Image (cartoon, rainbow, N blue to C red; front, side, top):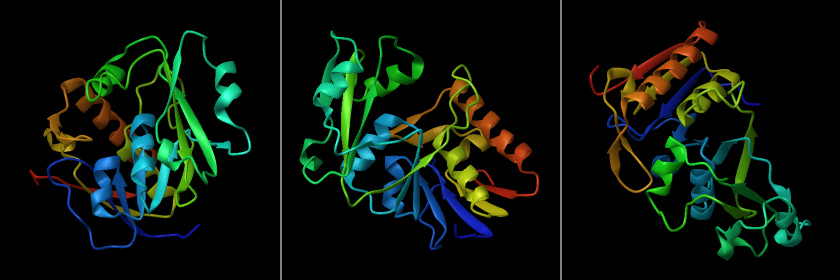
Amino acid sequence: MLRNSKAWIIGNGPSARAIAEDNTYGCNISGMKYNPKYLCSSDPWLQYDIIRAGHEGICLFNDFVPIPAEIIPEGFIESQIPPDYDCIIHNPEQQEGAVGWHFYCTGETLNEHWTKNMGVQPDYWRTRRAYICFIPPTMTIHNVTPLEKTKQEPLAPSGVYAIHHAIENGATEIHTYGFDSMAGVMMTESRYDSKSHDATQQDRFIQWYKRMAEWHPEVKIIWHTIKE
């Protein structure tokens, strides 16, 4: 693995900007516009949208292990989900020539995270449904081990995975842009528009960012926010 002493990580807050450096990280589908070397996403729905969009950089997806193309979804999926669930192919236009595929099942319980995502396309993203996403040969996807120790632990945001990967890649100085929750500004660019995170999300973000700093005191993390 290439070792880099500096990394630039771009979030989705107001201070986000394109960075003219090689070792850059973007977050979620909104980060594609910055053409980062690495694009991180810890949300399976955003991961699927990134695949469908055909991002050309290196994708860092946590807990993402595709099923080989030799195993066809028909028959396999039915054995993995309850009989009353339906199933949708997320990107049928990319099925031909796919090197593998992945599926995600929403389950039956609506939590805060799912409710907000389903609000984007309520007729598409909903409970009791499985989604199949084909992996085209043009995609480069690296599986990242989840940072959460238990299922009860609050989910780490994509920016935390970017910071963690940069450190594992040898970064000792990390410059972040668009992480304005660190300054109390909660506006962020979602998949389709701008919105504001709530106080619960702010607390989760800050706690995870602080945890990264505590785990790696030797690394200098510089937060460039709109309030600096």
